[in-house]
Length: 421
Image (cartoon, rainbow, N blue to C red; front, side, top):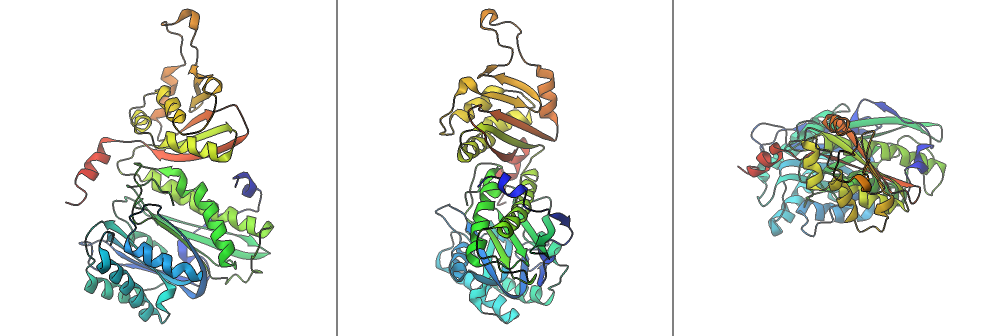
């Protein structure tokens, strides 16, 4: 679905509060002992059962909490999310499934709800069993510390190699009711979602059916979390969950129409913001880059090219070195599996046209080998900025898409060369 479809559907304003801004949500984050000292267990709770939907990793190796949460979400409802960091509970067999189930059971006991209403998430090192005595105690401590101001604590408790928390909230109007959408996420490395180690939790007080909530989530994921890449690796634990408890008391959204599109606009804004925060906090990253593809025949073509270019290690290392190597950009576009005309394609780095009609801008076939070229100094300046943009104009249609990435640096290797030690 086109980004433009939602941009005209009402205004959303940024607010403070994250996942606890929407009515009826509380959260907490505590240290239970998985990590040495940092917070490592989060709890997000709705005061009433909420419509719920999720999108999960496409990796065939799925962590135990992913499998448990996928099963629990078949009802389309949930009341709480319990998440730990520092241990992925992945590749842990039947013990892992048992432990993920215990997390749901313990949270349900502490909250007085059914275990099927609890969604479970984990992130961290793969292949180690959870220290369940500590986790059990931590869940009950987290339940005792739930607060309508607890979003920031929950956001801290889901971090692994992240350097910053990712949190946002928006307010708007649906059917003349004041409504809110809030979200937190984590992710820094192993980021190349195909719904990395990436988690996203979103809450809203909008009244909407589970079917329409899932539809809105899938469309928003396609334009946000599925358009980012840090290192090209998908994770065993990816999930994005949204809960909608209806406490805004708007007429229930049960079909497509202006109110549904207005909600989708807000949801997309929250998720794009969180997705960009993940890329900006990419492991070892020094630069944030938007890769825009314009003039495509279809949105899907534009997305495939944008994400292929954004995930190219050759492009990402060139960005790190502020090297305007436009040939790497065009070559990456050419392997995206999209039928386009290279001889019609233009490439910009920032505002600098570096390639025109598939050739270096300024290239003169009659005077080849001489200094006919774009302004390389200006292109280097554009790539040296903390935030920059690469634009690829296919000049064959009217569809557009953006992907977001970061540079690939020496520090990324340092971080991941000793991740488990």
